[in-house]
Image (cartoon, rainbow, N blue to C red; front, side, top):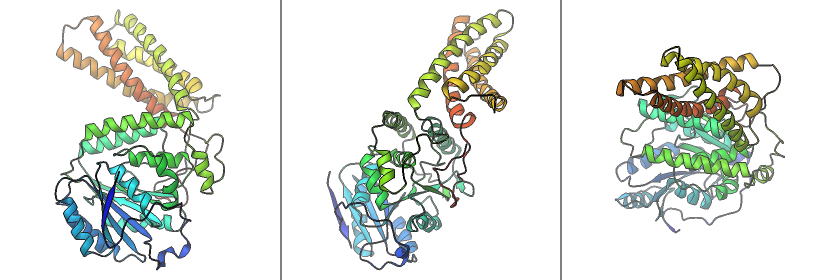
Length: 437
């Protein structure tokens, strides 16, 4: 993989981990910039120039030197020419050209070669208000935080976007909370920063070269016990976005599966990273963070299979005396109580009677959601096939119940049996790695 550069600065060689920024980093007058803001682009000949000019004018007021790097990953339009012209005209603007496509690939290569103390990136559409940039990097420069992310879901954020993207974003973050048990609220906002010494430790472990890059960096950092600060942002959706939501979602699912397997196998040197950055040894078990996702999934699947079989038998029994909808409700209700009790003890290892009533109450709310999924499938079947045979009803309901089971696992793991935590997005007094029992 090769890259070429133009502008007032060249590409620095990959360097060893930099020391943590000193307190006087704000007024540093050294040759290297304090902050390097990367703008990854692919075929953005229209939006690139206004973005860079607006960003350049904004950072000119910062009390430290800031570089803007346009990372062009395999554009086929006039983006390289626009970037080169901007780099030739504006001080502390440079252009890096990569011949392979991939936002994650571009960020990894440019960040790895940068000589700045703090590395950041933002999307070219500038959906995030630039007023959040200085707060984003302040905690990193002071040494308080290791990474900082803009969050559209944090308290105090103001977001304007369509219902489709809102639902997709919230579902993705729910999936992350349920599968990887993350504590940050917004993995996808294109507005993040990281200290250079932390990046030097984490980037060699990151495998994704596309949109999952952000999530992978954050998950690895959190599992290594690093400090992630969340900054509420003002964010306005770009209606002309060319991101393929379906393809991105599928890639994210593959990334989650790969990352969960890597963490579960213990092959990632997360303890070593924690120690090298002065965080001390990782506790044997962090409250609220399961030691084995694979083990939980195995036990949950076992309970789920038993519950599904019990549901089918109960449905057939109830359906002989009541209607299909009532039989579905009763069968789900009975299995929901047993399912919650079994998962409480076997899957999530909760012992004793403390909190049992609350867990069952929350489990019943999850049951109502599952009932809505299965009842909706039954209504859809009867609308399409009023004369549907009992065997077809049972098949549709069983499939819908499996979908409800997946949703159930995510909610049990991320809500019902999760450990309460101190962390609040944007709170500078606590970090994403702190929990309480």
